[in-house]
Amino acid sequence: MDLKSYLKDRAAEVDAALDRFLPAAKEQPGTIHEAMRYSVFAGGKRLRPILCLAAAEACGGDPESAMPPACALELLHTYSLVHDDLPCMDDDDLRRGRPTCHKVYGEGMAVLTGDALLTEAFLILAETPPAKRYPASSYIADLALAGGSTGMIGGQVMDLEGEGKELSKAQLVKIHKAKTAALLTSSIRLGAMTANATEAKLESLTAFGQALGLAFQVIDDILDVTQSTEKLGKTAGKDEAVDKATYPSIIGLEKSRKEAAKLTKQAMAALEPFGKKALRLRQIAEYLLERDY
Amino acid sequence: MDLKSYLKDRAAEVDAALDRFLPAAKEQPGTIHEAMRYSVFAGGKRLRPILCLAAAEACGGDPESAMPPACALELLHTYSLVHDDLPCMDDDDLRRGRPTCHKVYGEGMAVLTGDALLTEAFLILAETPPAKRYPASSYIADLALAGGSTGMIGGQVMDLEGEGKELSKAQLVKIHKAKTAALLTSSIRLGAMTANATEAKLESLTAFGQALGLAFQVIDDILDVTQSTEKLGKTAGKDEAVDKATYPSIIGLEKSRKEAAKLTKQAMAALEPFGKKALRLRQIAEYLLERDY
Image 1 (cartoon, rainbow over the protein chains, first blue to last red):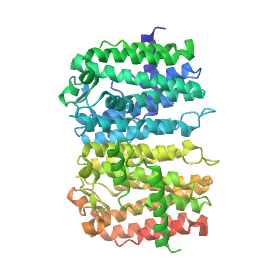
Image 2: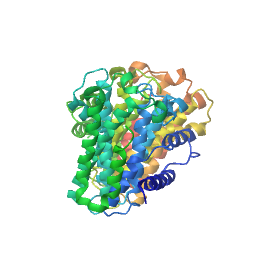
Image 3: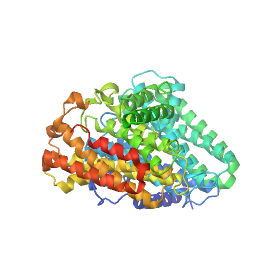
Image 4: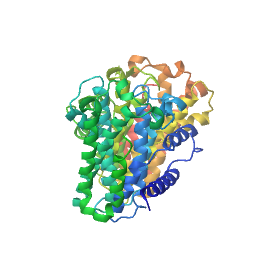
């Protein structure tokens, strides 16, 4: 199967699982369950869940066992977008080409929708079958650390505080590690854990995730400069408008492209011990680098 | 030991544990860890953690094992207050007599602070030692259900949607069950679970928690009408100002007082099977009813 079909099939499986896990829209109170589903089923690529499933595969595991963490990861990612779009944060009206949650349901409801998605992520994660090396609590701790005040949320704080300031490349790397790479890395780690991966394998995949996560963010920064709003499905040129430090603004566009390529090479190297089993992870990393930036 | 000393000692133990569990204020990024600590160490009575510890005691358990869920409960409660106080929600400037989180740190940071407290709650909960009948995942699921879209968050949604509308007593009970009783009940259940409580005991304590939670909310409604802002440590008369349905507004002050007394009696009856071991739970329920309303 080519990568495109693989990604499409896996995304459809994740969507079906999300539909099963999420409370029905008619469950009381209906508004919050509608708003949760509106935000989750908005045409996302399901990158984090697919990485989780592919990591389970790379470690010889069963993708079915990796489905609860895969869905938890997508809910956690979605909650962060809902809160990030709020007027008191990035103040964005468009997300994936559609009005953002607070534009449709109001600000108070968008705060609660994000809260509910985050809570639901842990509820679903609790359904992950424990592996021999990894009890249920290790999944919870991994995701909570990646999404918490020293991980993703910490990255958003540094991002907020860095607006309008001159940042060094080192500071920017720190922000991106926390804001993006932490959750991508956890996506891969959780998948590997459901496959009862050895410590050595988990370490290799952690290195893969960190390099991939940084590459992903560098490319996102580049696309914000080079692409149209229509093509991005979200407001383009946003970073410059709020005077946010980005790779292109600090080291220039050409060097940013080279940085992305270098990071992806690092990511590939980390996959070597897995041989053919890491085919999909390798292809996904290539696909992320070959986006039209 | 009299109840007052017991409550004071237990609150001090919980505060010490929270201080150990929470990231230090100097940990990067400092602002969010400061804001988390500002919100958590604001003079709260630690009612939920103390109920959790007392429930463990009632089931013959070790309060030390119940400390992680006790702290997780307080963080979850605190996050709900931080988000509830936001301008797009209840828009409150004062909480426990001090400026609310968003007044001090700004709205964006208050959203992130709440998010971080909720995430930290699950991180800490993952440290609960599993009991024979209750694996780690059962604690996570219990708290996530109590705090989620059909529990506490659902209650807040119904509350928001009910503003300015005439509600029946049945509708109000439904809101209070979700908004307040669910988390109080989970506080008691989690403590009992750390003590490896039998199913029958867990059921009795669930009934106790539900009755106590409703009584607590009725009394809160009454106090909002009868007490001064100074005495409450938060803005009084708030419910009436936003035309929110409350027990006093639906059934009147006298009937509300009787309702609170009746619910507390129900709560007491649920404790009968525990005999002397439930001394503290019984005293706490009495103390909550005997607040000066």
